[in-house]
Length: 343
Image 1 (cartoon, rainbow, N blue to C red):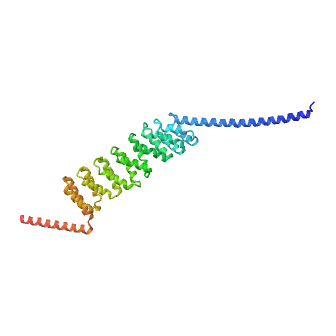
Image 2 (cartoon, one colour; image 1 turned 90 degrees about the horizontal axis):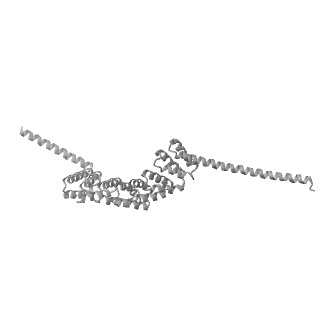
Image 3 (cartoon, rainbow, N blue to C red; image 1 turned 120 degrees about the vertical axis):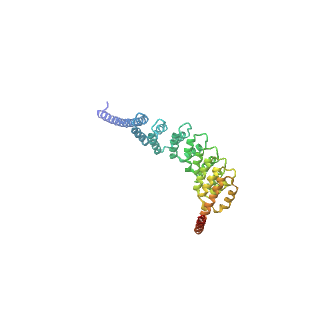
């Protein structure tokens, strides 16, 4: 027979252990349920925000607030949903502009590929492609510029977007691959003048500036180039203040097969720097003598006179005025004598 005291002690210890185990189990259950509830609530919040963002009937301010919260609180998961609205052609532009800023602030590297994919989508409209390109450029400039070179160099891509993409090349002007793209476009007469005009500053700001000027001279002196492009390049060369411009314009004047309008442009451009052209006077005199067109001959004569005036010293100018004054007095005196004889 077992003593009653032993049974009592045994039962008391067992009950205490059992209660302790139950309390621990209950505690962990509560913690687990709390975590599950928290995750459920979080999931519900994100889902509600996404719904508010995508709801076309919602107030614009509410959609903007939803985008802001998704970008700041759920940057690892909400990116695709934000991009869907960013590239939705039916979404309000103001909402898309705000989402673009939200996405840029997220700094989620996993979005770069998706952004560049949209920029490379030749079937999308240029506005959407530009948003993708600009946002990707903010994320990863090197990756974006690599895509830019591809787009600009692809003559089968949309011209409007090629022109947009070409404006990014200036940020990478010293890159050899960028230079190659710009030079290829400059040399290709089939490329639109508008696009060639955009890539020209890329050459001007690079370390290959002198080579760029030679390339400009080649374009300007090529009669097979379009007049509009040649005029544009001359304007760019004027900004360079390079002596190569004078050489280029003189080449145009000496070419017997050159168009009259280009020769007139060359003359008018040379007039702007008449004081620096004294050394060109002998050449201009020869050109004048061999020119058959009366208008060109007259314009060259005017240019020569302007150079002579601009390069004279103050003393020489005063002497000219004195000679002119004397001539005028003699003419007046002669006219007066003739009048008296007639009377």
